[in-house]
Image (tube, helix red, strand yellow):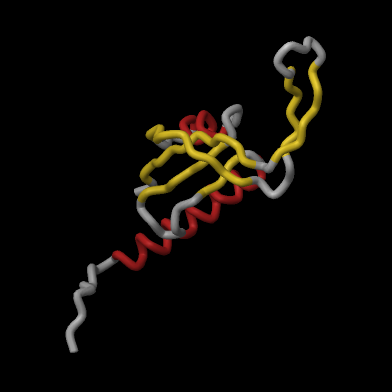
Length: 112
């Protein structure tokens, strides 16, 4: 039986280091509360989603990561969204509740 997988000397150490780095960045993102890492731990390329007003992209850039903006996406949050809107023909805003679907900014960046 043959395998298409090849052993690359030292690659397991790179993957372990990337997993540790992923864990550290994920902790930072989770503590911020307005972003999500969506990449697989150990991958060489990280995928990040943030709420529009998040400062996480600039914080990661300040740490030396080169973030590449991707097309915006959507994310379902685990809570409803309260929004103040004005109905057509009315000058009085009302508060409406809707499903927790929000627009997110998406980025990717290498960690190697």
